[in-house]
Length: 119
Image (cartoon, rainbow, N blue to C red):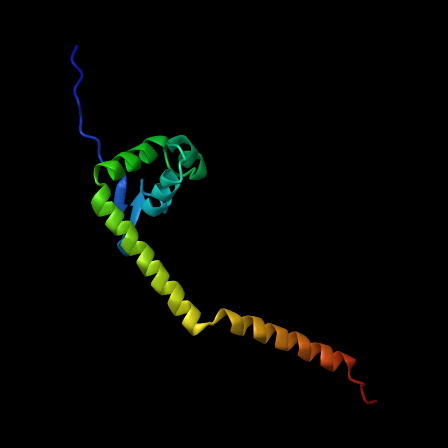
């Protein structure tokens, strides 16, 4: 008996913010492809993200391998946006200033604790 070959639907969907997510979950394409590039197998990725089925992980990897160029561009643009966001956060809240404020508070408490109290 001949087997009917059916097209496989992609497990990917784009959310309202333009982020590609997998299988109706909050797991992003970026996360799965990063793990794949690091050498993790589909089975290991599926274990890492229990909300994903093994079929969805394989489907995501297959989709990526077939459409590598536009998806690599999407991933690079995402990294650039992430870098811009981190830079903006650092400008608004310089990392050193937090440390200095905490040390200042700590030293202020020590000074007030060691000063004599009047009665």
